[in-house]
Length: 160
Image (tube, rainbow, N blue to C red):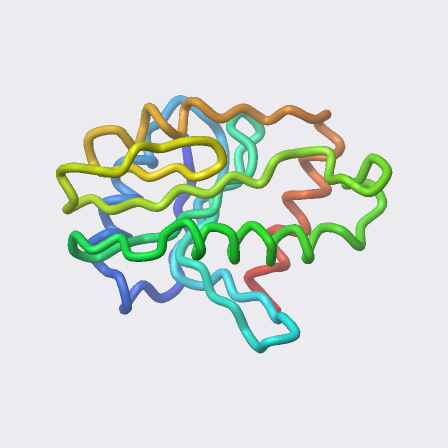
């Protein structure tokens, strides 16, 4: 079961609600943070919409879309993944050499969009029809100790 932790979702209330509903009962353990993952960057604070942390599924950041215009979703996913990588890189336990020991996955969730562009690694896009299957396609690829370290660092993203 996924525990949903709500911040403020006033900018994207419908897609936030649907994301929480669809992920709450998937066959995995973890936390879904909605509405307040904010990280500092050299260009100022960066907010992304939701972050799932699961020992089975790994780390998945969500770019939520209200309506049907997905816009430059690839660029938004790149920004999210880059900011998370910057957040994790200072922690030696999360790295093997210069690389993180795990993948940072990102999904653009556009529940109202019926026809989606093709998803191709590392750019995933889903709607209400395929969200759960897409999320279930991710797996945590590192050891448990790394997961718990990443979880603590991810949770701190919500406080900075």
